[in-house]
Image 1 (spheres, helix red, strand yellow):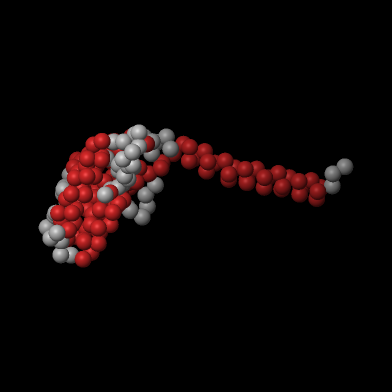
Image 2 (cartoon, helix red, strand yellow; image 1 turned 120 degrees about the vertical axis):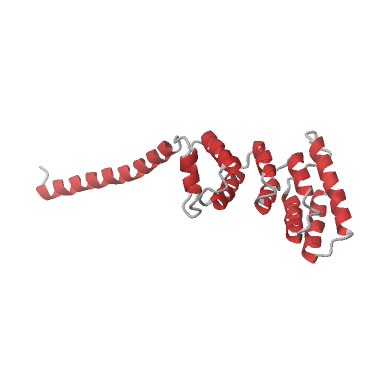
Length: 203
């Protein structure tokens, strides 16, 4: 016969095991549930206003992409935190690294130059390279530096590969020519160093 004290201990152990199991299962269930939430512009925008409190993993991917692009392209300039919201949206979208979003970054180059140059430099895309190349002769040396740095991170292709992208190779060749021309007149040491590094990378 089980003694009352021993019975109580067994009951407590079972209760503890139940609580521990619940603690492990419930968060996992919540994560799965959250991942199915369809993103809407208002919710995404609200999250973008708080850079230190962002968890976009709770949203379904396709709807999140649509909401981010909508914010980037159509957020009213007079809306609260407009600059912060659009800049944050570009970062979130860039971090997703979707080749089909290259045009989004190109479209915002004049307004968010540094951010867009950075993300364009992560794509093996002729359009991205051409857009970056256009800023190698910018009047602002800091912009020229960012453009050159973006080319340093651009994924390049081997010319003897069976999967060569002819357009990308042509874009990289054009970029190399622009860099060489720029080096003849560039008087900023930091920019020159970045240009030489870019030329070595893509040339």
